[in-house]
Image 1: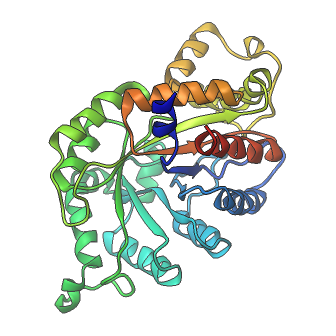
Image 2 (image 1 turned 180 degrees about the horizontal axis):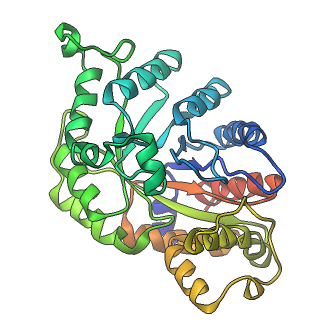
Length: 338
C-alpha cells in the first residue's frame, strides 16, 4: 500500500478536451462548456488543458485550435493551456510561431505547443487544407526545427522573424500514436505525448523506444511521457459504465464512417453495435478507465506500474455536463487522496 501511495500521489494530471459537440447543441454551446470545464479542473489541480486540431468532424469544434486556446486561457488564471495538438504539416511553421508567440505574450508561462504530423481529418479535407500536404509531412522534422529557430532569441538577425514569438519560452511537445513519432521525439530530445486514448496498440513499444533512444537536449534532460487516457468516473461502477456508452457510440461512428454528435447514454449497448464493432472498439479503447473510485484507483495503479509514464492526460466524453464535471472531480480525488 505504501508503494501505491507513492506512485499515485504527486503524478501530474491534465485534460485533453476534444471540444465535443453534443446532440442538440452547437459549437457555441461547446465553447461555453469547455471554458467552464477548464475553470473547474483548474481548481482541482489539473496541470494542463489541451485542445486538438480536427477538421470536417461534426462532433469536434476545435478546428481553429489557437483561437480556442486563447478563449480558454483568457478565462482561466493558472492552468497551462495548449494544443494536443497542432497538426504542423497543415500549416506554415512561421504562422504557428506567430500564433503561439501571440498566445504566450498574452498569457506568459502558460502556453504549450503540442505538434503532430497527422492531418486530423480525412485525405480529401487534408488536401483542401493544404494541397501540398504530402510533401509537407516529409518536412515535419525540419519544420519543427524551423519553429525552434523562430522561437529562439538567436533568430533576431534573420531576414524572417516571428514577431511575437521570438525569444519566448514556449515548450514544444511531440505527439504521436506510432513508433515513428517516438523515435523523432527521442532524437530531438522533446517531451512525448502518446494518443493511447484511441491508438493503444503501439503504446508500450513506442514509449520503450523513446526512453531507449532519448538524447538530452537544451530543453529536456531526461525522457518525459504523457499518456492520454479515457476516464469515465462515477459514484458506482454501474453508473460509470452507463455514462461510458456515449463514448462507445462515438467510436462506433469512427469505425463505421458514420459520425454523429455525441449521443446520450443508453442502457444496453448490445442493441447498438455488432460483435465485430464491439471487439474493434474495445481494442481501440484499451487504455480506458471506467468505474467507481475504487475500481479506477486500482486500474490506474496497475497502468502506472506497467508504463511508468510521467503524467496522465484525461479525456472524458460524457454527455451530461454535470456528470462530466463530477468525473474529473473524482479522478482528482483518486490521485490526491489515496
